[in-house]
Image 1 (spheres, rainbow over the protein chains, first blue to last red):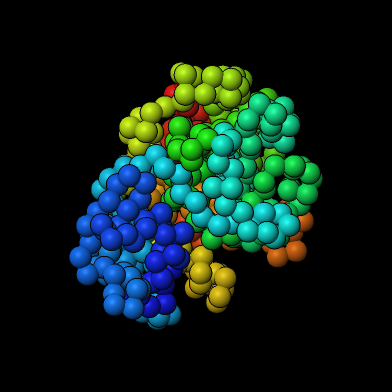
Image 2 (tube, rainbow over the protein chains, first blue to last red):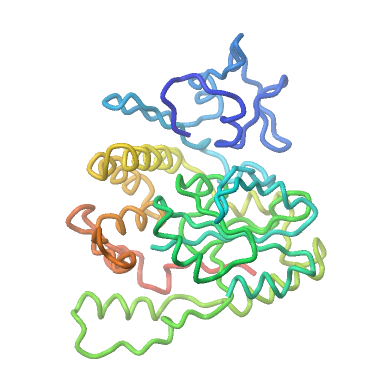
Length: 114
Length: 237
């Protein structure tokens, strides 16, 4: 997840990382990790606290004033079997979410022009 | 071929969703238009799905059941034997190109079995031997080391800089991603094609001799891996 500051909106954070901020902590599927101090009084997330708690690398590009938050390290590549639900554009430019296909089996295939 | 599979199985409850991992959507567009898909055909210009689903090369796929649970994690996904696999290598090619084609001919092929497994899952759902439990899915998804996690962050920084500043700003971060996670072909092939495709080229450069910029290339890395037969890890069906 790319950041220009170390505070993040919960909805954007969930869409990009799969981790949702809930009263019990940070949750992905059935897994919840307590994260005291992660949610600020204004409702935004403290990315440094979360990075440490979820063992996510936070890489800083000082020259361009950017940070990138990587996925949680030292666990399975998929922490749980619940499919992430990022918003991507379809060929007509409309936003598409995998969750719009609930009730159907889905084969999600990655390809590239390269 | 995926459009055909979608059309064949749509009435039986399967939807194929294709996602192009292309930083520049214009590169993916001609292929999408040619396929005339009736299924959702997405472009992931930020490579968001790479780490969320564990895609480290293309083509790869995950299977997701009716409740949104992954029942097969990311693995090589082909339902038709590639014609490149059986191509006669013409005489007189430049040495590097000749060697590349010879490695491509060695690529593994499980397309027939994989296609049959999809149909079995569509027919039998969770009773299919190819549908895995959540524990099997997470176990098979492999690990995410600190180096791999850091590589994902570096690759993302490079993408943002490529888009906002230019390729020169992206290259150092992409090199770092490649060094941290050399097994991730998506990070490498996306960067290499941008380095070796001319601005006015009609199609992306597939040979990807990116040694001058990145110190390595598709052929060099495939040979280092032990040859084309190891390029696509075997799908455990």
